Structure formats: C-alpha cells, structure tokens
Image 1 (cartoon, rainbow, N blue to C red):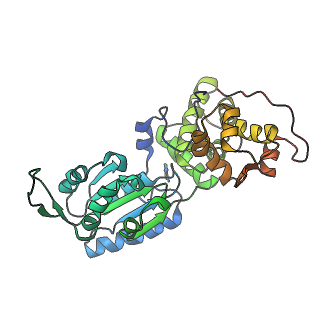
Image 2: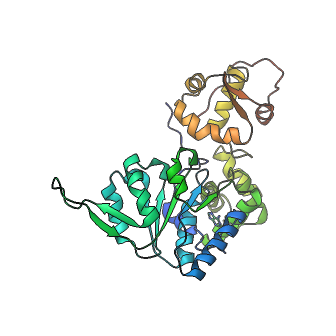
Length: 346
Ligand code: ADE
C-alpha cells in the first residue's frame, strides 16, 4: 500500500494546522459565507428563542464533511450568548460519560456532539428522556439494589452533527426540533471564503488567485483553507508573496491538483477504470488492487467526489466511468483501452 499525502480530502488530516483553521472560523452569522438558507432559518430560530427567553430547540446539522457543522454549532452558542461543551460520539462510551457533561451544563447552554450517528445504543437510549424532559434517573452508587437518583437538569440545547443522517435512529432524529442540511459551496462562495482567510492571515491575494483556489476546493471550505496555505508558501518562496491566478495555478499544479481539484489518486483511479477495465463495470476490489490502495480508502476518500461530479457511476455490476471522466483525462470513450499507463502515486 502506498502512503499518500493528500491535500483534497474533506476530513481533517495530520498536515492541517488546526489552530489556524480554528482562528479562521467565522464567529457569528454575519461573518458566515454561504449556506444562505440554513443561515437565514437559523437566524430566525435564534431570534425567536431569544425573544421568548428560552433555549434554542435541539438542532441537527447534517451533510458532507468539511462544510462547517462544528463552526455553526459554535456560532449558535455565540449568537445565543451561552457557553458550549463540545465532544464527539465515539468518546461517549457509557451513560456516565454523558452524565459528567450534563451536570456541568447551565441553563440554555449548548451540548455539541459530533458524529452523533455513532452514539452507542445504550447511550442514545439514556439520552432520550434527558432531551425530552431534562430529567435523568441515574445510579450514583454501584451497590446492588441502590435506587437511582433523579436529577432535574436546566433546559439546554443539544446540537448533533453527522455526515450520515441516514444512520440515525428515528427516535433520535425525532428529538431534534430543527434539522438543517449543509450543502457544497459554490465557487463564488469559496472564493469569498479564501479572500476572507487571506485577509485574516495578512496574505495579499487578488480575485483571480482566490478563484483559482476556489475552483479546486471541491466545494469544501476546509480544503480551500488548506490549499491557501500551500499557495501562500509557494508565493512566498517563488515570488513576492502575493497570490494571483498564475501563482495559484503553479502552486497547485506542483502539488498534483488539477483544475477540478482532482489529485493523483483520483486520476489513478479513473485511469485504471478506463484503461484497465475499459471504463467498467469493474469491482471496487479489482480497482483497489490495481491502484495499490485499500478498497475502503477508495470508497470513502475517492469515490464520493467522483460520484458527486458525475465522473463515475455505481451499478450492480460495478463501477463505470462516464464520458465526462474520459474527457477530463483527454481519452476517447469510443476507442479500445490503451496499454496500462504507469502509476505515479506519491
Ligand atoms: N471559513 C470556513 N468556512 C467559512 C464560512 N462558511 N464562512 C466564512 N469563513 C469560513
């Protein structure tokens, strides 16, 4: 298996400067770019709750990774003027783990749970009455026969985030009064996000430079900010530190990122599917063996974007390349497969 460093995945990577990404996060709804409908609906819900002097209803944020679910959770707390406790479902193994957080919540505060579809079943069931009635019967004593103690909790706001809304149980889904789906950002929105981030970092960038980065960011702010860092380094070392379209193009080309934001692994996948399997249908395992990657990595880190941009289709027989994929690689869909191309993964 090759170990590849990838710049265009939507999930956090070990190369990310988390501190920088957090510093770039918008703090309130006015600073937030994109997701216009979600922002508008949130604004109304927040304003209404504030007018009534009530906590915001429980809120579910779902959609692909890297689009700002965590950022929005922090913004909600900030706009409501309350504190937030943020955690992630896999770290909540027992009811007791949640209990610790619940007991420290003050009225109206936010409990944010990322990857909420991964809560263990018994933790989920423990949470149902808590979310409904802000009441919990909990056994403090481990002595056999000990009676549970009833805790009355101050009302609070539960915010859950998930990339897999379909994996949430119905009772859990039903606990959320507000449900918002985040969608991929347009190139224009991403360009605005890049310009804002460059401003905050004190990096000069023009319209063309911001657009060039935005076009290759796969609709995802987290990728845009990551690419901006690469381009900033390049501009500093190879030029005068200013980012324009040409500098951005050069910087991202040497990182192997093409005009659509595909990297070498994406192109290797397509090349194998087209040249070795005649465009498919081909099984995932067979493709994985040829690109020397593990099948799960391809399924989770390569295929979603190729499906989204309509470069591949999944059929019962296997994966199929579309005409768009052939065109992007400069290959003729009608011709017979060529001999295998060298793979240049790095
Ligand atoms: N940085 C990352 N996502 C952002 C967004 N949606 N708006 C402004 N800045 C961002």
